[in-house]
Length: 346
Image (cartoon, rainbow, N blue to C red):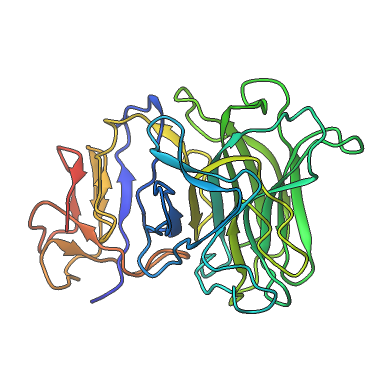
């Protein structure tokens, strides 16, 4: 069976309703590499991507089963602990093999977080959201908050590339305005990097009136080195040789790693429900598109059923198992314009 990609082109003059909405909880799409909903009340915390690492190790005082942001079920209450696939080990015993970037090095890492500390008071200097650290050469990245201290009187969101020449991109988290960091509030935090090493940092209050993520800073760095097996960890540093001492104080939920630099409108905020079909099937990445959009593909290249259609390329970071599925027999055609939103199971 050939690889698959769906090309969606909006007719000129067609307008799809774009009322604001919170998009998550996420369904896996063609670019999703890893996804943890963190809804479980006991271990393991399952990865929604088949073959991806589950979270099997919980570090005190962290607990599962805390109430998340409305509509997101449960969350992981870190409290300074951690959640990881493997028990901490000073060496290679906790190394994790996983997909963490597209073939060109592009990625998006994101989560929603609740701040349980006073952002205007002295705090531990680092709080990790997601980390791919290591005890030796397997160091990969840190995605974290640099918190308020007497010598650092602000909060920063930072992504650190630990491969090759260590480099970081950081941006001040807003202290005023709609996205100001505040205790007991929920935020979407994200970092994106394209294949050219252009990094963007986003910090956005979880608010259904928002239509896109809030960009707070940008920079450049080399892309992540391929083939690294880090000590993956949610909520702490991950590596063990000097202890896990960078615990996040708050709740973490809906952690997603993607193989593409997602745009500000392609993460947690976007079109309201009704503009898109609902509940695609993650196991087969079924089609999920609005009405009145033309779907185009290479004519006459079909797989094992007439409902599967294929085109000539798989873009960087795309899951090679992605299948486009139509609700009608399109054998011999090269395009289809749905009159209803497509929510087709495989």
